Image (cartoon, rainbow, N blue to C red; front, side):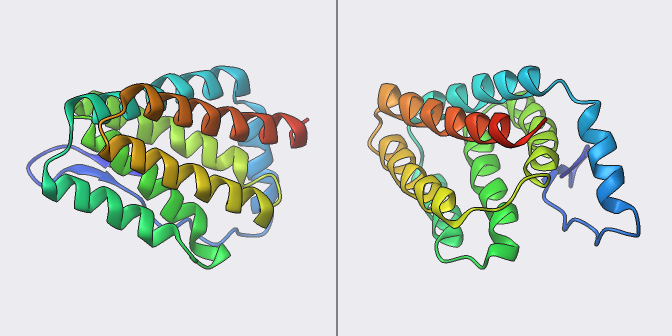
Length: 169
């Protein structure tokens, strides 16, 4: 992810460059420097808050369509594209919360979470469960169910955290 300031600024998801020789070692070195628990807790605070804000304040028709489109893009996505599209769904929710600061902080923490996720296998069963949670989350947000949106997002973040704790040293 890249954040740019200014008139044409924003937060953009960029394709991850193909790893060079030793790229996996470099990724592992970067991950070893991460406080995993801090990263996962911060992510949960941001995402649960964003989900609650979106549901509590409601979304305009164009915003709701944008959230639905981000969810639809993750459905049946090829595995090679899934993480990028999943990131876009979560980033869309953060942006729709109406706080540029929240969206910027989320983009930063998500980049770190993606580095962590890149160190573990992509499991289809987990992705299917994640997709079911995404659907429930978007439904709660669009229904204006702030408590439900927060709870689904909390469970979603906890699931990712448990997966990472199970695989990372």
